[in-house]
Amino acid sequence: MKTSTTRFTLSALSLAIMGLAQSGSADTLRLLTWGGYAPENVIDMFEAETGHTVEVTKSNNEEMIAKLRATGGGGFDLAQPSQDRIAGPQMEFGIYKPIDVSKLDQSLFIPSMLSATMANTTVDGAVYGVPHVWGTSGLVLNTAMAGSVKDYTDLCNDDVAGKVSYRLKRPTLIGFAFAMGMDPFAAYGDEAAYTEMMGKVEEKLISCKANVKAYWGGGDELMGLMRSGEAVASMAWDTGGWKLNADNPDITFVAPASGALGWIDTFVLPAKGKADDAAYAWINFVMQPKIAAMITEAAGNFTASKGADEFASADLKARYQASFPPEAVDNIKWYPPVPAGLEAIEGGVLDRVKAAN
Image (cartoon, rainbow, N blue to C red):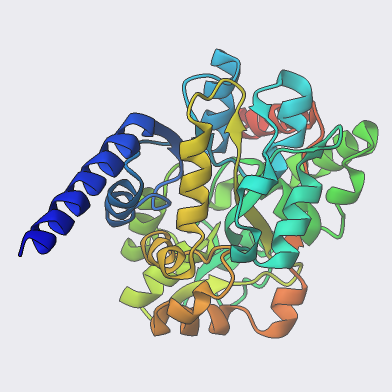
């Protein structure tokens, strides 16, 4: 009896010491991310397992870059911009710091996606980003009412006049360029050629501006337009189409004839982050297949976690397969890194399209 009591006391003492050590080294992770990428159930599990706490700020690419530029890379410990928003902003503004890949469990990542993202986010020999969530943008259509729409430029067709919606953002410029038979990514390194190309896209967007019911700014706005029938054809993310399909089988995501635009949202360390250990712990935690599947359930997109698709819901897998037959997957146009200064050209185009009568 005495021996059992002693063992119990020692075990309790050990646990107490471990708890003190854990709390003493615990940090608050200030996470700048997208909606759905840090669901509450995942945060609760992470905090219970590691002792770290998580503060989430939801954002998008433009806002992330703006926030980090304003602080010189301060205010956050981990951010999640798309992989094409890393090399350029880093060279121009120095808002990130290199990732120590030795602190990551690389076996958790899909190897090809990890190597491609690391290559695309390498600046002066240092890696600045690793992959997390990926997906595509293309067409979300009411197939019963927009059967003629097969590509981005078909949004200008007469039979969908006044019932079209898309964002005035760079994916619209890129998509229209591909649909017009041009290759904007090939022109990234030639400012003059890119400017000329964007000029042609500008003319096209202005010429079919009357077709646009509304330029949507957020996912909820687009959902409302499509559900009400005010819009029957749009440019949007695949997950938006799949969510709408659950309510109305006529509405779904369609990969455009010229190719869906593929993106990867990453993990990056802001230059002045103060909780690197918590950041690495979060990455390794959420890339576990079962945890990654929980994020897929919340965000609707698949992740770069190896084997996580085995835990995805049957409905999501079915919608994905319907939208992406093998030839559509092979035709995805993956965003390369954006060269410094390119977005200024695009911003001017978008401003002029918005202001045009």
